[in-house]
Length: 315
Length: 315
Image 1 (cartoon, one colour):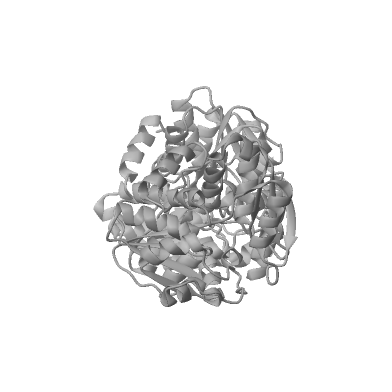
Image 2 (image 1 turned 90 degrees about the vertical axis):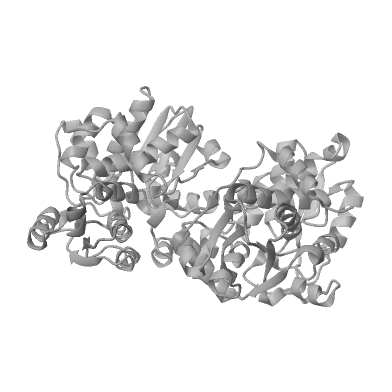
């Protein structure tokens, strides 16, 4: 199994009319600050506020009716959980979402608001894969993990496909990296359409598991990172996602929490959009100068799910 | 003189490639909350963060070269000032902006950032028209007022024109009202394209000068309103704008500061966009139930210029 541009094109057809075709935003202020022409794929404006709806819905809509009817189980720090919960509601089934006990309250409330059951786990001690597998066996549920799934990755890749369709030729594409599903899907779409494009993954410095893994040539596990970028608090790349990303990722950029916060402020005040910390990493990489580029760049803003209370507490 | 759909179409041609064609956003969460299909024209994503750039640039690009070269003067609580400052820079001239001394710091900084000169006045005691007229005479400047100008109104109307082109048939259109320029331009565009559309202006309750004026059939002056909606702290409608709005506005809805704050929170958490208080009034009118509607509605989010510090202070 692998992932091809055709898989992503097929996913885009299945998602047509279900996901928002999110806008590609432009800002001359940003362009001047960065020294390049930046095209911003605003997946914070996606349904439920993140690209995750693409992959979750895509994987679930491909299940057989019996598998779907048995219900879904997943784990998620928040956005994938919301995505599965919303997709389950739309597809007429149920979902159980394993969430870290310290996930933002608004994300938990949103998952429950879409009608899913939430079970809390400890992000720093529990093994979420084990928990999910056990629950799936006990209750006969179908597992839709957040990134270790080809159909999930194909769905995520549709964001980059749309970006390139709308923005045209790009010299570079910056993508946030957590488990690596968005990066894998985006890299396949981007390299398929534009073989010369430079694909850059952006991680929080506190959790550079993908950078370390790419350097080592194998999946490295780090301590679960403590960062404001809760969507990227991942200790090791996925096996499937890494098999794609080691082939197609040109480089990894690292950003720290202060740079993420500055990028969130820039997005708020100059782009007038709300970006959660993980989504701001790609802007942080550009604004901090950690990535320098010229020409035409695309960035994927992964999500915007942050409640006012948490936003206020960060500033 | 008056304002016609053709004037707005001509303005749209002149602004093509200069202003952003801002996206029309959709939210099923909002639709469910409101009970109608809401099409959101996101002028907070316009250049310099508000629809005002449309009118200012349009009026200024129609000046003769000598008039333009002498420089521009205007008054503004913020967004029109930024718009004139940016347009002046783009058109290669200079601008002086009279701003209330209590205008948000970020708006003053932005005007100065675009290279304009700022002169402060007291919003509650000074007559800004007098100040502007005097300054224009003293320095030989060309006045581009924020709404009492047909070319300004024509430029503002292009937002509604784009909204209807993109969203199609609408049963109602909600527009924030300050001096009335956006409402006038929008009403002409909307009624010209969709004769049956219901045009609703939305004002802060503390400053319902347009509502009172429409009821009285003449321009009524109220005490300068104290509201968080600083962009609508206007004491009386414009003469030209009122001549249009009394003819084409079907009703006025009033919202209070708490409703505006709730709408800003909804926009932040559920739409993931930043809206300044004045821009949030149209959402506030819908979410508070002060305006009830069915079918397809358009709303114009006028702007998103609020700095993080002020936003934090509101929550």
